[in-house]
Image (tube, one colour):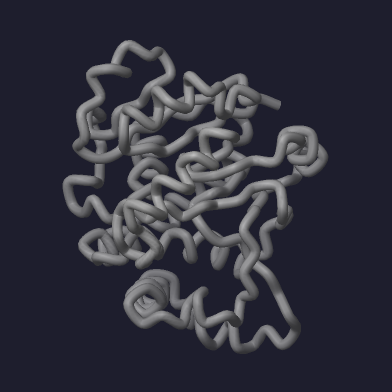
Length: 249
């Protein structure tokens, strides 16, 4: 089974630092997906660099706040995936040293997805925030006839989903999800919090359609650097202290 890894990043210095420190060196088929409008002159020579704004199809023209999902869209619409299974990772993660060994135990012929950041599906942070959950749920109901709250509230037992854009999945799952998201995209592409909506749409999709997958906690830690400024975490001090952690793997 061929596996590709795509890391979404917005600053050429991050790529240079990570390459120098051998971050993500464990992945044989790794590509950097460069998002946003920052310069990339110092890394444009790299064979494993994909620059979203140079591609034929790039939804960043609509809304730069779609964040990592812009990269998902770029890979899908421009047919840039050549694998059976993919890792879609944000740059600001720390992987456990045995990440690949553990992940390999879960990648089977029938594995449709693997999530890494658990959140209980009834948690307010999943669909409860009005500026994130409401536009997304309205769009899902409009295009797919699903009442998300009715579905979630109907789940009586505790159930966890994998949040954030850090996901692994079969290419078949990816393609079908992106097709499902296409009409929703048109509704959320101008939303300021639009980037957080696909992070919820994907685990909802996996749960609602009963996809076969796994939630593997404690092997991927997402630092949420928030350089886009939508979660309230960002400060120069926060970024600098956590960036040092990223450089240490």
